[in-house]
Image 1 (cartoon, rainbow, N blue to C red):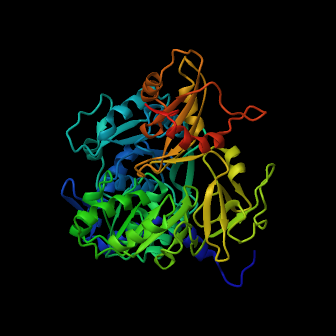
Image 2 (image 1 turned 120 degrees about the horizontal axis):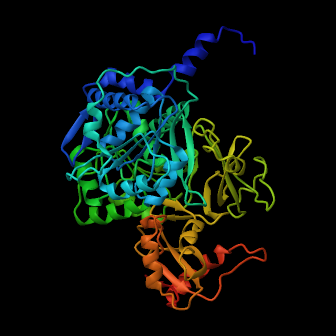
Image 3 (image 1 turned 90 degrees about the vertical axis):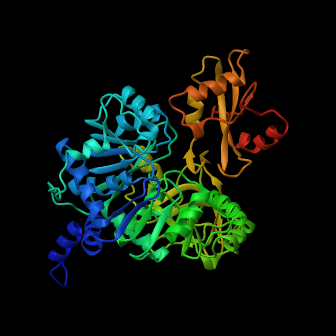
Length: 554
């Protein structure tokens, strides 16, 4: 296409140089002396210069192992300095980081390894046994398996190498990028829930990483002198992008490592380290609020207390604003898009219960639902707060509109530049959206999206089980959100709930949070005329079944 000016230098510079890594390296040059990481558990603090040298050592070790452009480096790491090193390092040589859920069962990790074929796998010492079993049973064997973040002197399994030994092989000099980077290169591959035990893999390109970082910086008003802490795992897109470490290191700010959420430590560290931004789940705020009321800390440094994953209850929101900070935001989004809407402090508490309106560069709509086809993006439901439809998202700056090696799911999820979420909702005249449920049967448990089919497949492997149906039940202590419950049809009447619980505990395909907390032995399960399980029926019946003693705790 003809332009009115010579665009060659602009295109060459923008497409090859406007990368997240170049943004990070600008901060190394600008703020090399400033804090990049605070690790309270070890007492260590890393400057930007020190973080970059550590990332160079790791990257040069990767290169010695033959890691090249588009090779995968998979991690299963807690929120520790090694995670940040793996965020920065691989892209120095064009490799792809794939952060996996450290809560996965060995079989789930093995499936991910076989599907994505990483050259190097790095895991936290706290999950040594699960990681070792995953490596034992997977078909694809990484060139190197590295155990990191070993705070307790845990022995390294045979055939693995400690992180400290591994980076000794790499020098501190800047690695040589073998090919010129491009903003469309894949840099991170996220894992998200699917209807099978194998999570879907969501590629993120470099320009999407930059714009996601920009989004956090804009929404939070983040500056280079600020300090942040994540109460959710970094392996999520939310952990990296929703107030997370991608934006932090693109703007030149600092982060405090919290490996596992601890409400008391969070409040203590906000006060001690003068933390400005905290991001977690709404259930985290309930725990913070409870402890803060018992023993108040100075939380005046907080500029934003951000949450995502679930809407606010209005009364709870009012209490959080009074006890913790009035500067609360609540975000909504997908792994495929990053967050795309926010409730901001000026929306609260009146807007609590909704997901607010779309972010600056994004747009959300609620469209009609049809049995046999997608609604067109223009086919919206009335903005009357009553008519139910499906939420769709337009976020081309943060989505690749693609899954890795999954064309069937591409066709199901993406259409005409829009992401079809599967969430059902209503919206009002302000375009504020209230989520009602899902078109499919996905459950949210401990902040993780899971599908009942994964759990049902594992339960059906029991020799005394004929069939089963799994649904969700609200968790009484509110911290998990929901818990899975299973209705099981025995093929052998000697089957007991204790046997089922033991089977689920021992299943290599069920992470701890996916194991049902309640079971019922039943004669049949509800099916459509074509034989499909009607999960929505059991979802409605589960609370009453629990009250009547039909569902029994394992």
